Amino acid sequence: MTIKPITYFDNNATTQVSQGVLEAMLPFYRESYGNPSSMHHFGGNLSLQIAQAREQVAALIGAESTEVVFTSCGSEGNNSAIRSALSNNSSRRRIITTAVEHPCVLNVAKQLQSEGYDHVVIGVDGDGQLDLGQLEEALKVPTALVSTMAANNETGVVFPLEAIGQLVKTAGALWHVDAVQLAGKAPIDLRSLPVDLLTLSAHKIHGPKGVGALYVRRATRFQPWLLGGHQERGRRAGTENVAGLVGFGQAAEEAKEAIENDVIAQVAKLRNRLEQGLLARIPDCVVNGGGTTRLGNTSNIGFKYIEGEAILFSLDSHGICASSGSACTSGSLEASHVLRAMAIPYSVLHGSIRFSLSRFSTDEQVDLTLQVMPEIVDRLRQLSPFSDDDVSWLQQMELAPNP
Ligand code: PLP
Image 1 (cartoon, rainbow, N blue to C red):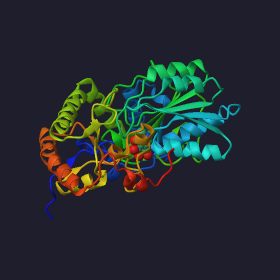
Image 2: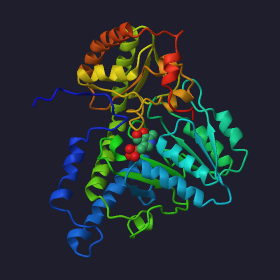
Image 3: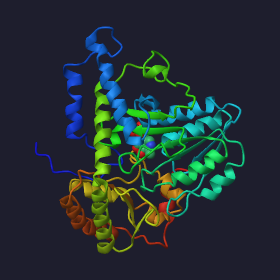
Image 4: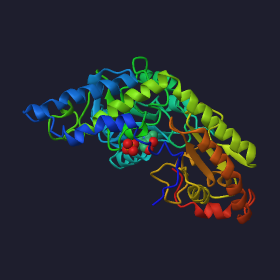
């Protein structure tokens, strides 16, 4: 079987495990496969490896290693952060999120509403940037927790963390940050941000899938979500995924080095060449979130009058992987809740594609995409009889109510 070379521009969905990470993990599947809780040294010695991984992850975000609790993924981190914060602040049954959070935050908030909590949703502007005025207003009512993402998975829009932190702390609420997308793509220093809880996921930074971390500030009380053994100092039960944790540690160290060596700026250069090249070659397209601060690796472009899924299929036939929304909602025809919160017009929204690059992306991959996209869009537009004036077909496709 010959495998076509892949142009992988879907790094916000997941990333390739780096060679260094793979090599660091392998011994823990083959030779050192013990249980860290065992009394014998074959298992017991593994706690040293876990401690090193914890140091490496802590160093990526400017935390103490004791403030890092390993989890199974970003979704678990977000769920347990929110549940813990609310149970430790039970006199305030109110949570604030933004409209563009990942479903693993929004669906918890929905569940909480059914349990009698008040859920306040803060909107974003046309670029996907947070409405700080709305947040300030909402915080006039006593609130247990504010949960905001650091950077959006679909548009790459980065929220102003310092300003959010100031508002949240002035109001005396707890602050949880979903940093799954920002980590590894920009520096994070928790010594200078008043974050109480912060979520990370290894597979977004060239680590393995099924491993994550929750930062819990030393002074913040934590209520474990997963009960059982004494692992993670009683904060998260379950036999440790030693290979996964070692891989996460290595990935965190490599990500820190990439940031320090300006590799991130090189990724941004490549992203800019892709984005500007597409805008120059293809009429009637817009960058969603293009007017505000974004991650350097992400470009979400709306190609008017055609459907994103049709573009993705055509790209796939050239070995190019992109995405039409978050990995969790693509695969359904439901329009992106993020783009809808930005009030992106239907004719743009349904033809929006996310390209997300990594430090392994190349100039050749950008060239190939620039070469094939004009023809793909042109062909699909010739098949599409729709224009800005006729959006009824798009409105009919709208299966889900606005969030
Ligand atoms: N938060 C954000 C912003 C994400 O992009 C994702 C994954 O796409 C998650 C949370 C969930 O992370 P995981 O896939 O590790 O559960």
